[in-house]
Image 1: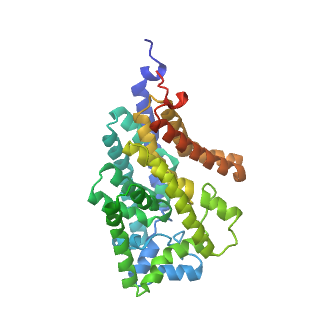
Image 2: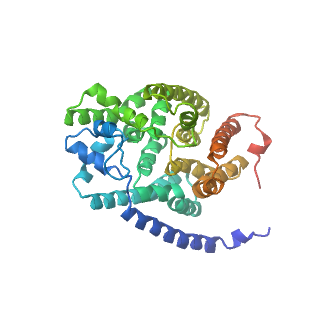
Image 3: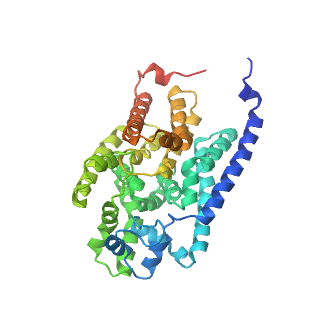
Length: 378
């Protein structure tokens, strides 16, 4: 059997990709060293000075330092205590180093769990460190890499400690919430309660340290998010907010959020019919991209799907999944700017994501699947 060009030059291509990736990653790190604007250091500093930053930012309508508007949960400000002991430049650098560590740990952790070959593992690591969501997260000092690490823990380790630390992901409302819902759908009520312990500890410490009303303070992060009108253009909540709810009060928006949670819950019921734990996790993590506002760095949640699809490359549906993820990792932002017509582009993109999720669920679970999806390509 004649070997293809790629098979003949497998090592050469890998070495070339490594060189390109090293240059790309070095450039990303250099940007992160001078930017990091979304690393929420300032709200944590205010908190440890005894100031309720939620109240202050709600009154002011925004934060008072770079793009740090303080929309994250109480726990994040508690966890950031060591950073508040440092000046901004030093704190930003340490946070960047932690994120660099996680950027390598996450793909290695996943690949080891899936028993992916060394060659494919290297490729996946190179993709992860050069894809736009990772580059953007490191550049902005975002929390998305940190959150992704804790989101995958309960699926891979399935222990009480993994569930406890998965609660750290709840600091980011637009993505971490999905674990909370999924524990309920899976009827893992014990793990559900274990996972909310860190969140509740963060809340208690926050309202105690700032002498805030406990009940009011519990809802202040959500109030801040809704009053800031955070929305993008590629999810159900944002589309509703742009075309129907733009002038409504945040109480109505809060009710809409509740309805979307119900819809998301029903969606999870379908996803949880998938028997393979890791494959199921891949689509659980896609839900935040469908239902709630997210920026380009949040597409980092697609990485587990890429890993699973690479490890099961023989099926056509997984080849489609790989193309889908690579598009979001490298091409989506470029195409979006070229088209510059979000009124159609974003809803169609959202529709495609939903269809792809449904197609994967159907392909994985049915005995008599569509020939197209279950066909093994030689």
